[in-house]
Image (cartoon, helix red, strand yellow):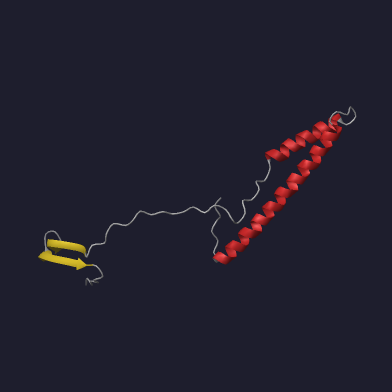
Length: 127
């Protein structure tokens, strides 16, 4: 289940999530109570000749409620995926090395036959 992002802080989002889950839990419990109430009527009066049509109507209502049933919320303590990254490759001292490089345009290089070596942690400026 994905939430549409609205500009808000994470704390506000958590509060909204808890409120949303409380609403879903309440709706789920209300539906379950209604299904139990209707099922109790069907169990009591299903075989009765005078109430059989009402019991059949209640069975249809139960089926409709079960089809449209709200899923019980999973709660805040749900499974969190674990991210496992492979060990990164070794970071070499030489980050970039160019030999006999040309800088500029193909037909008119500004610098030609240049060798440049950029080491780990080194910073360069190109003007």
